[in-house]
Each structure stands twice: as C-alpha cells, then as structure tokens.
Image (spheres, rainbow over the protein chains, first blue to last red):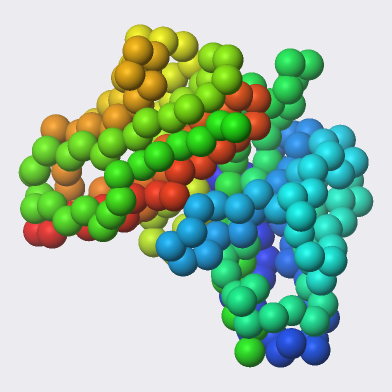
Length: 116
Length: 109
C-alpha cells in the first residue's frame, strides 16, 4: 500500500467511448502526475499538477484530458482513443518544496487500458 | 538534456547469484539518483536513493553507490531471490525526474 490508489485497475474501451481514470492520494502531497508505461518503452511523463494547477503537459494528444479538482484527486479523461494508446497508466504523487521536487515519487498500481 | 541509460534486459539469474544492473547518466548540476522497482502487476516503488557523490543507497540487500567520476549508479545484490524478479528502473532528478527504460530481472529457483 503506497498511499496512492488508482481505479479502475483494468479498462477495456472502444475507440468511440468516453471513460475516465481516477487517482487518489492519501499522503498529503501537493503534486500529482500521470505517466504512460508502454511495453519496451521508457516511462513517459504526461502531466504534472502542482497545487492543483497544471505545470507540465508533455505534448500529449488532446484525446487525453486531465483534471485535478483538489490536491488529493487526479483524473484522466479519455475520449476517442486509438489502439496505440493501450498501456499501463500510472499515477504518482510527491511533495514539492521551495526548491522544487526534492522528494521521491509514490506510485499507484496503475490502470491497464486496452483500446479495441 | 538529462538522460539515463540502463543495461538492456532481460536478465535471468539463478537463485543466490550475484546481480549487477548497470546505470549511467548525463545531467546538468548535481542530480539525485534513484532505483525504483516494479513487481508484476504493481506500480513503481522506490528501492533506494543517493543524493550526493559517494553516497551509498541500500535497501533489502540491494546497494548502489553514486559515482560522480564515472556518472554511474550501478545496482548490486550479493544473492538474489526468486522474489526479486521484477523490473528495475534507474532514475535521476535534476530537478525533473528522468527514468531509464527499465531492466527486467527473472530469478529462477
């Protein structure tokens, strides 16, 4: 138990569906992240939220839409995805200090997404 | 930019064998270095870290020493167990976190 909970653990969706991934952290951290993990590829940082504001968006297609309503919750809204978007989506949190991110990331167990 | 290079896997060892997973990095400034581990069906979790040159991080029998002169942070364990089978990621922070591509380790009984 890392203190970061992701739901659902598994999701299968068609290319025309709309679905959402949810992440909740119970660690009191002030930053949250979405990563994409595909087979045989490095981890890809998608989005970073600090104090509920998006501070990083790494050229992610608009069919992925993040939402951070408060410091404990992070969503990834999915719409008209492609089969190549099938991957493990990992949420993480950390505590940012004045000097930036000096701490470790705490990851959830991931949401395994399959796009048919 | 910053980058992390790990030895390519997969690595397959017998139980009680010695493990080394190589990791080298390029970074501006003085990065902190990490090893994360991902067990099957789980997310990543921090295994060990080192924040300055010559520091040695250790946990669960694993060790890695921050070598500034060779820009390396190799992961070692003297005697691996079947339960160590996982994917291991080397990472640096300077100040953003950059991950290596991961090394799959399989330990056979």
